[in-house]
Structures are given as C-alpha cells and as structure tokens.
Length: 485
Image (cartoon, rainbow, N blue to C red):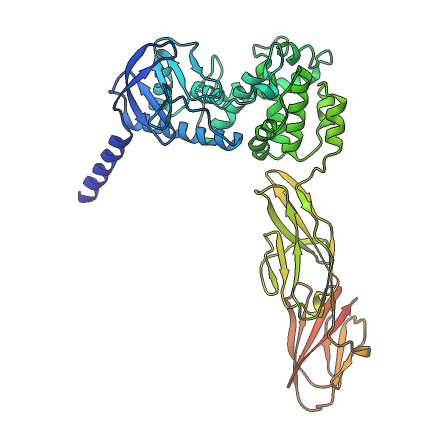
C-alpha cells in the first residue's frame, strides 16, 4: 500500500509538472487567446480547456518532442524562434484555435503550429481511445523545419517544399514510433503504401517525365495524390535503397550546403547532388532513368566526386616477429560501423577481439606481438553505414623472423619435412626427454598441443592447409613457421 501511494504521488508530481496551466497566446490571425498548456522539453501543446486527460496529453507532447528532435537531427538545426508569439517558455507551440490557414497551419522555418479545434480534438481522441496518431502535427512540424526554399524550390508550381513535409511526416512518425490514424478513406498503412506506389506507376507510364509531372506541379494522372506525394515517393525509394535512414539524416544537410538556385534547373541539380552525396554514390544514372533533367554541370560535378564510405584504405604492413601491427582505415561518416576480416583459406571471415587481435570492430585493428604464424595473413575491413556497405582493399601482413634459420634448424632442433602433409617430425639433442609443443594458426589460436620425444611425429592430417607456427617449449621457447599443404 505504501508503494502504491508513493507511485501515485510521483505520477501526480509528473503530471503537475507537464500538465495544463493558463497561457496567453496570440493566434496567427492576431487574436489574443487564453489557453491551457502541456509542456514537454521542446513542444508546448495549447488547448482551450483544462479538462483533457493529462496522461494522454503528456504522451502526445512526448511524441511531438521526439519528432522535433528527429527533424533537428535530419536538418542539423532548429526553426527560428518566434519569441514574440509561437516560442513560449523555450518551447515551440502547437495551439488549438477556431480558425487558421487550414486544418493545420505551420510557419515555414519558424516555430509555431495551429490546428483547428475539430482536428485538434480528432488528434486527441485518437490517442485517448486507440493510441493512434493523426499525421497533421507531424506534417506541420516539417514545415517549421523547412529551410531550403533558396536551394530547392522551383521557380513556379513548386512541389518540393510541401513534398518535403509530406515525406518527412512519415519519417518523423517512424522515429516517434507511433501508429498512424486513418487518412481520409484509407488506413494509415494504405495511405503510406499508396504514396510509395506512385513511383512505380509513374515509371510504368512511359509518357510521363519530370517535365509533365513535378515540373508543372502535377502528380500521376488518375491518382488522387498529387505532385508533392510523387516527390515523397521518389524520396521513399532513395531512403529504402541508399543507406536507409542515413540517407534521410544527411540529404537535407547536403542540400543546405548547395548554392542558392537561380533557376528551376539549379534547384533540380541541387537535389540530385544532395541525394547523391547522402547516398555516397553518383545517382546521375538513376535520375536519368527516372526521366529527370540534369545539367551538364551537375553531371561533371558528380563525376568528379570521390564517392564511397571509405576515405582512406588500409595498407599492407611489414614487421619483425614480436612487433605489433596496426591496420587503420577511415570513413567519411561518423556513424560508420567497422568489421575486420581475415582470409581463412576458405574465404574471408569476421574477426573478434581475442588473443593477439584487438579493435576488430573499430577503424584501428591491432595484431599484437606478431608471430611467424601471422606471416602472409590477409585482412580487409567491411564498413557499413545504414544499409550502405563498402569493402576495403585486401592487405597483407608480412612478418620476418628475428633470425632466419636455414632449413628450419635452430638450437639443435630439426623440424621436417617442409611443407608438411600428414606428419611433422621433430628431432633435438636432448634424447630421452619430452618437450612440450603447440601448433598455432594464423588467427592466433592453438590447434594442437602435447608432448613428444626427439624423432617422434605430430599428426597434422586434419589441419587445414595454410601457415602455422610450431612452438617447442623447453628451457627456452623456439618458434618455427611451417606450411601445411
């Protein structure tokens, strides 16, 4: 009972912190309003009543906070703060109002969203009764994060600014991990799939091209969805086929780095270049296949780029037995994931940190205290960003012995034959005394060990072909490189 009471008190404290309190607000149309606020970290929800369910409102504002942070991640910035009206208490407002510029209305590049009363309560009731989220506030939030008019807008009939909000609405809802509410006569899944399906429909009609669709603000004929949705469909394809969410998180940042467009062709070029840079791949052939126009300048610019996830390749290394060997690679992306591999004789296999090996999942792979068993070891690195994968060059580790011993003879020990097949023989002067031995493979693992007398053999018939090191353990430890055929 005491635990229940404590939890109840804590919940009440939480809800009191985030729940409603009176707030003066000036609407987009200049009307002064007294609304009640629910405050998250980034978003403030404003409604005309304080009787709404606090848990529902808190959940709603939490999801909008998550969407806000996702937009900020993808754009690398936040909206301009309208501290005179729609940025209150360091939070961007989403306000219920009787009238605004549509069902929902959001400033471009600046804080502030308004939702008409009936649509606001539609959003609220879906969350309260079905845990579903209407797309309106996520879409309008995208308009707050639209900073690219000078870079991407067409000179006339522009579909890109709204198309960005259409596409990013879906991405933000995925990031917030919400289930979408019905859209018109469709379930949300149907709505999303219909948008995705516009690109195949466009490609199937060979009479369609950029000039008679996006270029004039038109969608696919016969569809109830328009040019903005068609642009979103192109974006879905790029997201799904080029680096997944990594593409979404970088394409708008790359667009921001482009020069301002003077013409519609400039804007088209800017998007194709930004899309290619986000995909780490020259997408000129793809956009030409899609029947988009691309200037000779943009083609030349992209052809001159050094695309790929890997910035610098690892190099082959020569070391003396006992030295450390570092293989280093660098990536153009800070989110890159690394996996070093070794040639096993049957193809490349993933390495793990074990024995001599360290940093197998980093850009700096170490073979510590190299032995002759590591000689001629081939390694490479698989670098992954999202679903983009790049493979490094195959490089070699050469290990030279400290003292070269002719015919594998040293310290009165003879190891033969070379190469070996089924049996390896060892002779030494201390007849009658056993010596311990170990056989070590190129991965640094012990594959055989035991004791033997001078002249006895070691059966190696079950070992894979390749390089091994035989260590003889007596008063001193002696190492011999052997080759198994």
